[in-house]
Image (tube, rainbow, N blue to C red):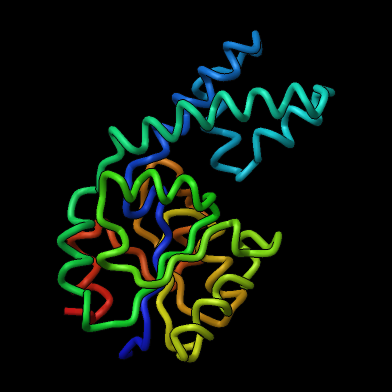
Length: 214
């Protein structure tokens, strides 16, 4: 079908930021004398478990958790601004699509994280519309609230939109809003995500042809 708009996830889809998030999270926890293995981080991230909630469930006080988060964010923002890379083919794909399709970036990350990436990578060259967790009113993906914010702003029908992501919540988000869900598999992509997606594309370099965007 001819898509009316393309809605992209950011972390793990267009930019390889999750290793930097993992590095900052494990370092901040270690500073607070809390042990988390890399494999444990991977399992929690794959299930979309928020570290703040994980710590609260373990009985840590809110102010202690806030201090860990502040330490993590300081490291993560620095990492993003200095080291965050595109995934292979991401920039070329966006260059090929710019001006041909309305596009929006929809991410559960905070605006500050996106701004830090923007210091290194020209996201706003491709995305005049970026919706972050700060804009979602508490309705994070997979809730479709941010999808409707995007389609209202772009003045397009959600049923004619393709949502591109790497995780199950990206597919659930798309379907909850009546859109089509495309998975580009990455480190944290589950089998269930690929089974539920309308389209699975091995890499960003193949997305244009596979989705009929070429």
